[in-house]
Each structure stands twice: as structure tokens, then as C-alpha cells.
View 1 (spheres, helix red, strand yellow):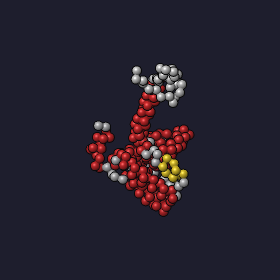
View 2: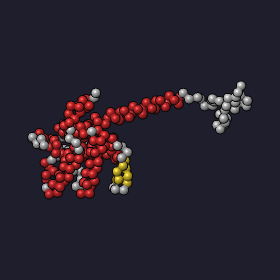
View 3: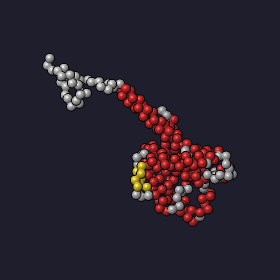
View 4: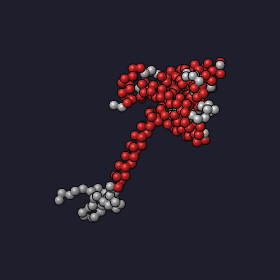
Length: 248
């Protein structure tokens, strides 16, 4: 039995069902609050300096920051987050989703604390990276799920996740100071979905090896299996010929 299964047997009853949906609801409440008090956002971001000064609530509140200020895009983001939460729970169960979310929060905090650049504020980016890690897990579970980009163009979520990963990689190449907190923010994704990618890779490798062995075992070009005893023709001469065994 794996470690995750063992933990689920012991602590599964304490899992919070609909945790991602709960986060989406809190994001809506925070979005409304920020419309009246925009400065309140400064109290929610994940900041190394503030954490070391005892503001430990930031370890949790950064996941409640909304990703958009526009009401339409905020509504779309919340609806997508509700879909993601339901899909992940159907695929993994409430306990594993809880573990994924809490792991993302913990790894993000560790990444911020390990960053060398004290003057660099990655609080808002940690919220973005956390959302990307949730979306990436969704793309792994249902890669062919389609959403309407700009409400018009149907696009599979696996391509959106790949595009987001590519843009993130460019940012990390251009900004070395972001590498540690960004990589830690995605550790939950690598731990949860890494084995899935590895199994897929090894399976494709095995299939390719079997295909190679099969093709190498085929008869050489020009070889034949049937030959007529009367005229000497084979299936190489005419693929439409039918060969039968005579009575003698």
C-alpha cells in the first residue's frame, strides 16, 4: 500500500469536501472587499519580510487573492475553478485534493522563505502560480477537456497548460530570482502528476520497442508466403490472387 493510501485510510475522514470550491467562494468575497478597500490586498500576499515579522496568516490568505479585477473575467475564473474542483474530486477524492492544495500552500511558503532577493515581492505571483498548479493538475486529469477561449475558440486545456508552462519557463530564464519560489510553487504538481508522466513515457517506450521488434521480424522485401504449383505465381506478383490447397 502506498503512503498516500495509508494516509487516506487514517485521515481521510477529516478531509474537507469541496475545498477548491470553498477557495473560489472566498476569492469572490475578497474581490468584492477589494473593490471597497484596495489596500487590503497588501495584508493577504505571501511576503518573506512580513512572514518573518510574525504575520503568519499570509501562509494561507494568498490563495484567496482573485486572479482578475475585471468582473467578467473574474466570473469566468470562478466558474472554471468550480469545474476544476468538482473534476479533481471525482478523479482523486476529497482527501487527495486536500493534500494537493495544502501541499501547494506549504511548498509556496517554503519557496518564498528560501528566496535570496529580499526586495523582490513575489506575493502576487505566488497566487498566480498556485492557480496555475491547480489548473495544471486539471489538465493532467482531463487533458482533452475543451473551454471556449474568448467565448469563441474551443481549446483543449492541455494546450493552455502547455502555453502557460512555456511562458513561465521564459520568465524563469529572464528572472533568475524567481526560480526558487516558482519551482517550489509547482512541487505539488510535480509530485502528484510526475509519476503519471513517467508511466506514460515508459509505456510509449515499450510500445515503440515492441513495434520495432515486430517490424524487424517481418519477411524481407520480395519474399512470399504462397506460390502456385502450376504457374509459379506468388502474392507478390498479384495481391488479388487467391491460393488454395488442391485435393492431392
